[in-house]
Figure 1 (spheres, rainbow, N blue to C red):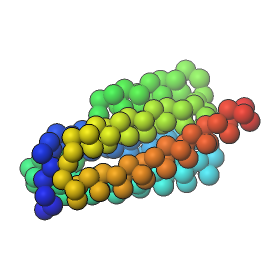
Figure 2 (tube, rainbow, N blue to C red):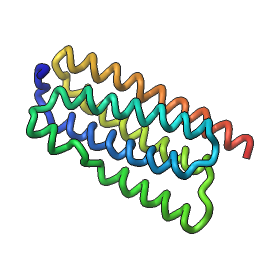
Figure 3 (cartoon, rainbow, N blue to C red):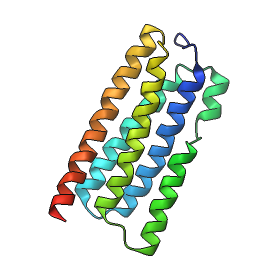
Length: 152
């Protein structure tokens, strides 16, 4: 196990948000029409899964098992909202991406919160690496959202 950060609740919070994003992306892959957007969602899902595995190494074993499948409630609500929109009107790729941008923003906010706590150097490096990958995901979604808004 790696050196434990002072506040393991911050790690749990990040993992829960990432798990919520994983579920949201899984749903999105089934719902969106374009193969290119499905591939993009799949890449982002894999990034989140890798981040969860990395962060779990910094949790005590009991805590790691506890947060393994848990998701952040606000992301679950956003996912339900998106499903409800889809039930009322066919949801398009643009709208799905718009909702996922909010998920990515929440992931980045949780990571930034953890970094503000001045964690041990090794953990801070991991958090910055994960934040960089999540920022790339957010920027890719933003570019796609912007492109589909112009096209639509």
